[in-house]
Length: 527
Ligand code: SIN
Image (cartoon, rainbow, N blue to C red):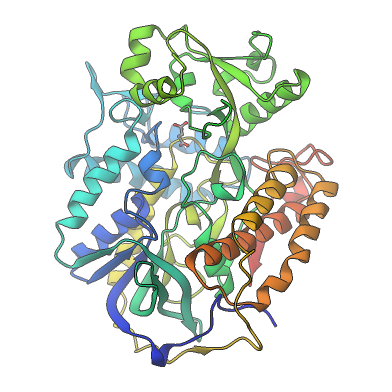
C-alpha cells in the first residue's frame, strides 16, 4: 500500500486551530505572501520548522535582480533569463517576473529594505549570464538578510498574522481535490495539531540537504516537495538541480557560498596549477551560465586530480574586497583564510532546485486552495537553469499574485474528519535517522549530482527500492519525518534524471552529453 501520511492519526482526537490562510515557511516567499495576504484583512498563520531566521533567503548573498539600470529594460532581463533557462522557461511566466519584479522591488524599498547605493543611485552588480549590471545588493553581500529583516518587521507589525516557530508541517489535509489545512507537529510539546485553513501556501524552500556539499542551511530538506507529492500534487522538472560553482572548499568547514558577485566584480578562476581556464570553456568566461562554470570546474578538478580550484580576487583590490564582501571576508577569516592575500579554494555545491511543485501564473497547484511560492515551486521562470538572483524576485512576484488570487475566493467549507491508519503500520525503526540521511546524501552526490549517467542513476534507483519497506512504518518524531521527506524527494529527482536522456541546464548526462530537441519538454510526476 502506498504511503499517504507519514504518521497514523485521527483528526477527531486532535486539538484544532482555525485560520484563513496557513503559510508554511518563513523565507522571503513565505514572509512576503503573509504580508500581502494580511493586507487584504485575512487572518494569517505562518509556521516554520525552526527559527524564522533559518532559511536560504536569509543567507542569500549576491542579491535580487531587477531591470532598473539606465542601460537596462525588462526585455533584456527577459532575454538573459531565457538564455540561462536552456529552452525550458515558460515565456509568459518570465514576462510576469521581469515586469512585475521591478514594481515589487520598488515596493521593497518603500517597506524599508536598504540596498547599497553609489554615486548613481542604487548600486548594481553583475552575475553570471546577465548582460547588464542589474543585481541589487545590501550590506555588500548580506542581501537576503536585509530583505528578510525588512519583511519580518512588516509582518510582525500585522495584528492579523500569527507566527509560530518550531512548528513542523507533517502532511497536507486534502480531500476531493481541495486542501483544508495541514497536520502540524508542535516540536516543543510534541503535540500533533490540526490547522484548518481556508487556503494553504507552501513556501518550504529548497532541497540542498539532499547532497553532501551544499550552500543551503540544514532546514533545506525538500519537505514541501515530499508532502505535496504524497497529497497528489504535481511535481515538475525535479531533475534540474543547480550547483553553485564556487562554494568554499576547505577541509572540515561547511560549503559556505562564495557569491557569484565576486566573479562579477573581477574574480577569476584558476586551476589547481594556478592557470586561468574559463575563457577556454565559454565566451563569457567566469560569467558564463552557472551550469557551464560548475561543470568546467568539475572537469578541471578531475584533470588536476584535485578536490578544488581557486578563486583569485587580486584584480578586485583589497579595500574593495573588504567593503563589497564583508560577510565572505569575515567568514573566510574565521577559517584562517585572508582573501585579500590568498586565493579562495572553491568547488561546486548543490545550491538551488529549479523544479518543484507545479504552479500556474497565479501560484496555484492542481489542488484547490493549495498554492506554492519560492524555491519549492516550479513556476516555469527558471527553466532548466536559474539566472542568478532571480529567485528572491520570484518569491516577491508570485507571493503578491497568490495574495491577489486568494482574495477572490469565497469562504471555504469546513474540512472533513480525516482518519489514517496504515495497515499494520508499526513505529519506524530508529535507524531511519542520521545514517539513512548520510547514505542518501552520498548516493545523491555521487549518482544524481553534477554529472550523471545511466549506470549511476540505476544504482540510485536500487538504493531507493531497497529502502521502500520504510513506507510501511510510521515516523515517531520530526527527525524521522524529515528523513522520510528527503528519501521521497531524492527518489523523485532520481526518477526524473533517469528519464531525461539528454543534457540541459542543471541536468548533465555523461552518456547523453547534448541537448535533444525531443526533450524540449517537461517531466511531471504525481503521487
Ligand atoms: C550568489 O550570490 O552567487 C548567489 C545568488 C543566487 O544564487 O541567486
